[in-house]
Structure formats: structure tokens, C-alpha cells
Amino acid sequence: MKKEISRRNFIKGTAALTAGAALMGLAGCAEEKTPAPQEAPKSKHVKVAVFSPTEGTKNAAAMLAAKFSDDVEFADLTNATSRTEEVTFAAEDLAIVAAPSYGGQIPMIEGLFTNLKGDNTPCVVVCAFGNRAAENVYANIASIVSKQGFVVVGAIGLVTPHVFASVAKAGHSRPNVDDNKIMAEFAGKIMDKLNSGSIEAITIEGMPEIDFAKEISAAPKEFKAENCIQCGACAANCSTGAIDPQTLEIDETKCINCMRCSFVCEYNARSYDTAVKRDFIEGKLSAKKSVEYFI
Ligand SMILES: Cc1cc2nc3c(=O)[nH]c(=O)nc-3n(C[C@H](O)[C@H](O)[C@H](O)COP(=O)(O)O)c2cc1C
Image 1 (tube, rainbow, N blue to C red):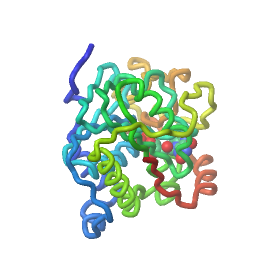
Image 2 (image 1 turned 60 degrees about the horizontal axis):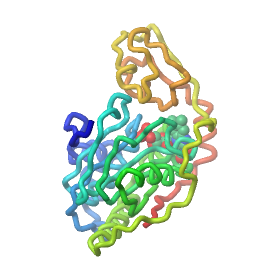
Image 3 (image 1 turned 90 degrees about the vertical axis):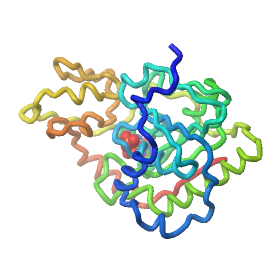
């Protein structure tokens, strides 16, 4: 069924940005006091399609979107049920399509982003990564959307909090003020390109196909039955529909270890034991990676 953008699945960008900026400790801080070197002319209507189980990708994409326009809409495609309706984009929109890096590729979900339909719509591809690497994420997203009416005019990798690391390590407090300046610079270059009438696709390095056999290492899950009130939030919000809404059992063949169940659980019943991963990641990934972009 072809359908215009569903308002139910969208939140207006300003609200998202405010929430994102507040989360990152940026609301009303240096970003406003120190003008970015290259402010993009804000004109486009921006539509952001995002997969973001623990909302790092969504917050980073909101910050980027605000560099292009004050008129931003979101299609949050994280819950399995949110990916059933077609989401259409007009030729004059700017699309932003964003996903996290899981082992250097997009999360292993059949059909992720295939419900997006462009009309020769310029598209910016975003990878959020936890201070390790984006690797094939740009190529994965570009390969999907370019078959669906989008022209990939740029790609950007934004460092976000690594879900396995503790606060202040491996991507925490990112995107920061410097990252915001690079985002503004990137947006300015993309807008210059679009305003010059050029919407040529860029060449993106990397493997376009998702490797569904790849072992993506994850932290062990924990479930505290004594804390669970059977509210069903974990099942309703599961990104792959892996949790049975009646029994709350997890089908491990469907689970991608995105940690959304622990993110949405308000009763500390669902969690992941990240201790071993945390030690490894904080040891290996202590040096801050930079934002990277391609135009
Ligand atoms: C299963 C899994 C694998 C991950 N693999 C990588 C990786 O290879 N490189 C990296 O930099 N970050 C990796 N991360 C960290 C995420 O990319 C980062 O935390 C991101 O912000 C998560 O997105 P979200 O907050 O929108 O859910 C991984 C996270 C998970 C859950």
C-alpha cells in the first residue's frame, strides 16, 4: 500500500533536536555561542528515516538534520511494526537515512529501509558508530536506497555513545561541539552542491551487501524475573519482533542484540552484562575518532 508520511511515526524535528541536544549536554551551550564556520543555508524540507534501538543514532541524525533545515520530520523505523508502511519522499525533499554500525555493517534485518520510496530524492547517508568504525554501513545503506528512488549525494559517520561502554568512554558525550562544527561544514557543502543544480550520486567504497552470516559479538543478556511486571514494553518495542508478547520469551534466532529491550524496560528486568565488552572496548577504543564525511 502506498501511503504518505504517517504522522504517527513522525515527531517534529525541533522537539527531537531539543531532546537530543539536551541528552548530549548541548542545549543552549557553546554551539549557539560559537557560530559554526560554515552555516548551511536552511531551506530544504528534511525527512529523516532512522533505525536506532538505543537512540544514539536518532539524536546524532537530529543534530545533523538541524544543520540543513528547521523543518524536519522523522520516520523512526526501529520497532518491527513501524516498518510495514511505505514512507514516501518528494523530489524536493532532502532525505537523511541513518543506522548504527554493528560489526561494521547495518544491523542484520531483512528489508531494513526497503519501505522508503524516493522520487529522485537527494539523500544523505548517516552511520552512527561507537568510536570504532563505520566500515560498510555507508555502502549498505546506499545500495538499498539507490534502488528505491534516492540519489546519495553524501555520507557522514558520526561518533555516538558505544552501548557497551560506560559514561565518558568510547563515544560518550558525542556528538560534541567540534562534531557539530563538522556537521555544519558538511551540510554547507551538500547544500552548495544541491543549489548548483547537481544531484549526482557519489561513489561509496565498501561492501554493499549485508553479510547475514557474520558473527556480531554481543554482551550476554540478563533477565530478572522478580523485577518484571509483565508490562510487555520489551515485546512491543523489540526491533525484530523477537519477544513473544504473551510469554515474553526471546527467540534467539530473531534477536540481533540491539539492547532495545533493556533500553525500554523501566523495571530493570531486562539488561545486558556489558562488563567484559566494556573492558575490551574502553581499552581498545579510548582514542577519540573523528567525524568522517564523503561528498
Ligand atoms: C551488537 C552491536 C554491535 C556494535 N558494533 C559496533 C562496531 O562494529 N563499531 C562501532 O564503532 N560501534 C559498534 N556498536 C556501537 C553502536 O554502533 C553505537 O552504540 C550506536 O550508537 C548504537 O546506535 P543506537 O544508539 O541508535 O542504538 C555496536 C553496538 C551493538 C549493539
